[in-house]
Length: 107
Image (cartoon, rainbow, N blue to C red):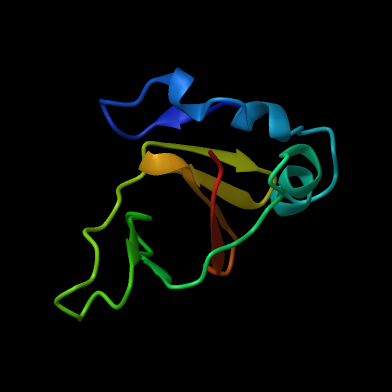
């Protein structure tokens, strides 16, 4: 699996063990692979919005004054028809073809 840096500050070391949780030869979707490989399992968090073009994540309603600053992707990869996006603070998104997504913290 190849990861593409989307930010100049990205280093492959930032991914930690995440590449070890995913196997292209395993037919299961990314969430199932991570759930069985990562000691903390896949535990999606609610409350995120995503810019459909840039894939930037934001917690809370982007129209509210107290919404967090959007997090830009640091690196992306693909597992069959899923886009995998890595963000600062260990946040990780699995994005489906229809634009739906789940976000979890893998730290």
